[in-house]
Image (cartoon, rainbow, N blue to C red; front, side, top):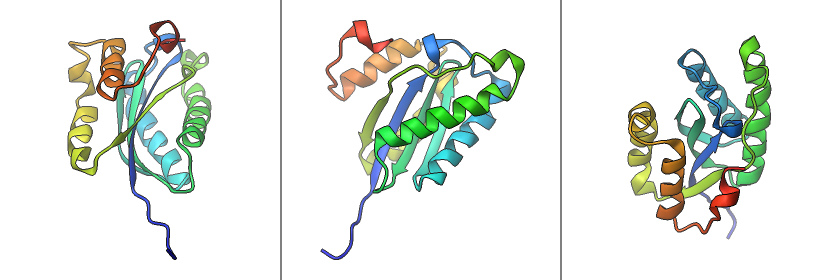
Length: 150
């Protein structure tokens, strides 16, 4: 084969350190745009970026030249530095170690986009921990509760 053709949709989820509610409405739009920009800078295509007070969801097409772990390192490192410069109250901002990354069938992209867009609505009823456990169970990821939350 003379050409490498890849199309991998990945739904990425990660939280703030100790799930602290740092992502306030006055920062969230800028943060989500920034995260999308980090994806683009690494030849990944952001489809939807969103979240809630203590975590982020990113649906992107990951580049054939980028690993999920590599993208996450760039996303977390760059955005953590960026957040700390926004305001004095964000000087102690950090992301939690670890993340979830789930492959998405192209037929489910619109469903995931809608889900990410409605994060505030979802979290009026469900905590991030319950949401994340649900994803781990849905995608049949073995996990030990003692280590999931760091």
